[in-house]
Each structure stands twice: as C-alpha cells, then as structure tokens.
Image 1: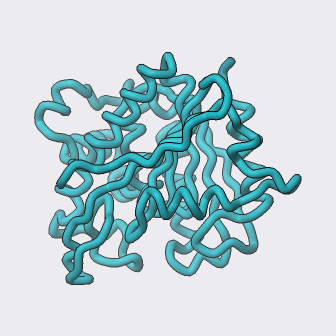
Image 2 (image 1 turned 90 degrees about the horizontal axis):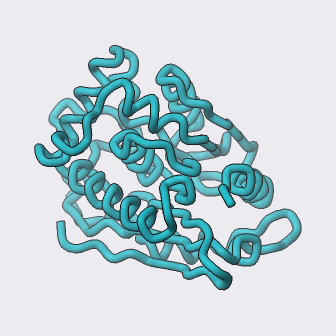
Length: 259
C-alpha cells in the first residue's frame, strides 16, 4: 500500500481536541470531508462553527485491488460483497486490514501526542471506515474520548460469538508480528479500550449496510462490556441523518470532551 494522504481541517481557535473520521469503501477522505461538512445541526450551524477549537483529521486509504469487483478502489480492506460483510472464508480481508489498522493506529498515536492524550481524541468512521475504526480501537487498547460510528457493522461479530479467546485470536491475526509484540491483545486491553464512550448511528432505510447489522454491532460490543449509545433514524440512507443525527453527534462530543 502506497503512502496514504491525510485530509485535515484545522481549528480556527486554540486547538483543544481532535476528531479522526475514516471514509467509506470507494470514497476518499477529501470527498467524505466535503460532504460531511455540508451537514448542519437543527440550528443551521455547521460543525466547524460548533467546534471551532477542534481539529478534524480524515485519513485516506490508498487504492487497492478489489477482487470481486475486478477493479481498483479506495478500500480499507477487500471483501466479497456488501451482502456478505463478515464472510471471509479465504481471508481476503486480512492483508488490507493489517495495513489499514497500522496506518490508523499511527494517526491516532500522532494526534494524541500533539493534543496531549487519547482523552482528547475521538475516533470514528462511516460504513467500512466504521468497521475499521472499531477494530483499531481494540488494538489501541486504551480508552479514548469517544468513538463515533455511522452506518457500520462489526467485522469481528462471529469471533465475539465464539468467546474471548476467539476475538483475541481474530485481532492478532490482523496485526503484523511487530505490532503483536507491542500490543498485548488480552481481555484487559480490550476492556480498557471499550471504556471509550461509543455512539452508533444507523438509518432504517440504509440500502447498503442494513440496520440489522448496526444493531448486531451494538449487541456484540455490549457482550464485550462496552457502553453504547444507539441512535436509529427513519431516514438517512447510507449516510448521516440530518439534522437529528448531527444534533446527537454534537451532544455526544460535547458530553465527552475533557477540558
């Protein structure tokens, strides 16, 4: 995977927090950010106005070959289809996820060092970016300010169903050997990471990732001991509900921002 650019929206006031958001499959960081910042809260305010001291970081994954589509596209990992999000009998997701998780972890580490701690950094994403982000959180192994997921699914759902040993094996398989040594993936680190407040949003009319998969993600995280705020909306498609979803995100960020 070639070097991946990072799209940044700088704060307009002294920097206090950072929000890292991962784009979806087939999209780019710049495209996602452009569409995301068109969204408004119910008072018609844009997010950059609501959070002037926040730095917004949008990592962009490089183009990689999509085996089933037979074309190159921006994707955090390859997969069979959106109808079989967790189905991976041949392990085609592993290589891409391994590279992407290393990239995301490096971005998080760098941003935390800049702002003064993970407690001032939010992580999240949409669709495949959400799936990648929640896995990255477990690898980081420490609580962050919050996790914000839109239209996502749990890529390790099957492993959760098989118990703690299975989920730890699933995560280790997606780490490079050096990362495995540095990141002791055990029950303690997973529990620590999942002290992170989590907000998940999903629309009933999502035609790409059915809301049932988002509900399953909430359930699987609860099994692992996470506290999840779940918000579902009648409309919104495979995107963020506006303005209610934006309002809910703003409340979540404000409630979990350390000063």
